Image 1: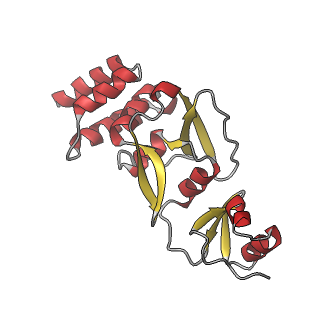
Image 2: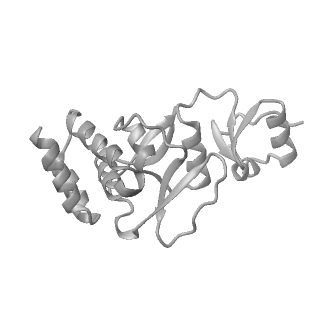
Image 3: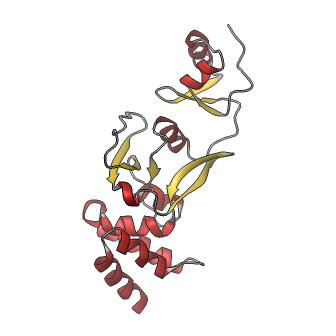
Amino acid sequence: MKELDKSLPPTFTAKLSRAHGVHPRDLYAWRDDGRIIELSRGVFRRADAPPASYPDMIAVSHRSPRAILCCVSAAVIHDLTDEMPPSVQIAVPRRTHTPVITYPPVAVFRFDEATFELGLTSFEAGPGEPVRIYDAARTVVDLMRFRKRLGEPIAHAALHRYLAAPGSRPVLLLEYAEALGTFGPTRAALDVASAR
């Protein structure tokens, strides 16, 4: 059996391992003897890699590189909620193929192409492993947009936490809300939150 290729990154796909000359037989032998861990179908992590804070999110980002972490999953990262969603929530552009990922569980939201990357940023899900995510302001606005589906309490709690955080920008919330077609409800919630 071939030795584990030291040039492989901490998390990699089967496709990348083939590009490094690794035969699938060796790849699965490494998995079976614990040298690598299969995070999702075709996505592996070296057992000797530094621990990742969010391995599920890393796995999903490798399975669907264009996807962006959104809604409650993004709110968790931005410390806007204490809720733990039962699945990793990702956004994909409306006219693209919907990723089919059985593990980890995924909930897919389809967003308009014109505003798809509005508020896009990234965070380190593991050391040196960035994952695409919407910023805190966009996350609050998305929760307001989907408040009927995800719950009004989550949306309003996220708004309150966002406003209480240092560096919050209510004007940015309104700019995003206008671009995303939810200006009225966001403005009303912002007025109520500011009145307290």
